[in-house]
Length: 466
Image (cartoon, rainbow, N blue to C red; front, side, top):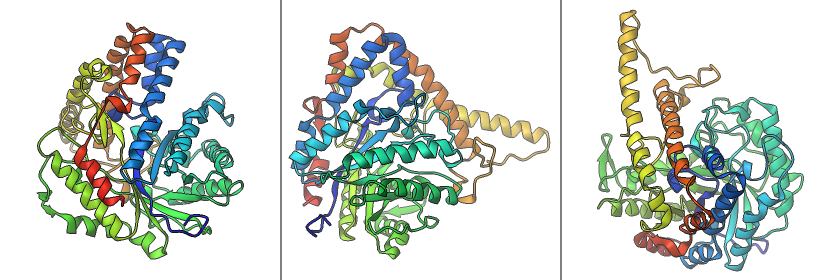
């Protein structure tokens, strides 16, 4: 509800890959911090800062927000990296310049009647073992280190104090996709951040994500707060494969009825608690084949299902190089030409943990080869190989985390990360030859005027955002 008591149904897109960069969205290998460091090493600090600032300036402009509003969307979810605001070497001191782009998009949104959800996508100490929280180590230290927690609370207190009177801000999505085998720690962190926010802002919504990448709510205690919204992430199998839809996958026929059953089951706990439900992420991967039309059909069915239950949603993601974006860079832009060789190599190697190439690349083949050799070695010692689940601090995760922390998955991630660093230096070498004018042209590639609109998907937004 807004301040006048009018019901608001939030429907829109997530601005991923902008203020928290991701490898499959921009096309570089590895994590954002590694990418920034590699470019700085060859360009120097001044030229590197120039490039990244111009990239951020062009990635989202008022043209983008006007376009999004024109589709009928009334919300954007802005993904942030804590490093935008705080340096690890200078904790608890927040950089004013870090807020410049967030202030800018909020101003654009205000002009075009669009709400903003502020999403802390990468937090201090890492909340999950994956690339999208800028995590190169697969460790999740926020659950066990008090200083990371205190820095997390302090940053949110700073953000909430700054925007407490800003009606364009719909609320605070405090932590993207937490993953922990310790529900007590998760509840402690949620209670701590809620207390920090409410100490300065009692008005805005606080969005709380389910455990296990936003999918599990059973272990989350319901806070004593009337302005809580539960946030679920809902990626479905037929949206992630290069295949027709409806279709049979893993022995199961997937159609709209099955998608609805899965969604209702996943959201049962928050629905029983009577709180609003916000689908912070859903979306399909496009492979550039004739089957892409079916990926749009999957997204349409999901939009229809969410609307049926009156739930709120933002599709992931708005803009990229052609993997999931509603709009994507044209192939003849300087950035796409500049990164073509490295994008081809990283797909062959399988350095990305998401998108085309993530399952069939060299890293996957190497993982299978190493596992086979390991099985043979253990068998010679009279030991039968088991895909044991273990995290990087030596603990045995609970059963529900068995797949997320399996030895085989950890091995694949480690090999992918190492190959990504190798490939990243191939990209960095290309940067070493560029002057300011050429860096400017690379950054301008991300302007909306240089992007292609996925028309069928845009039509679906117009239909379901009415």
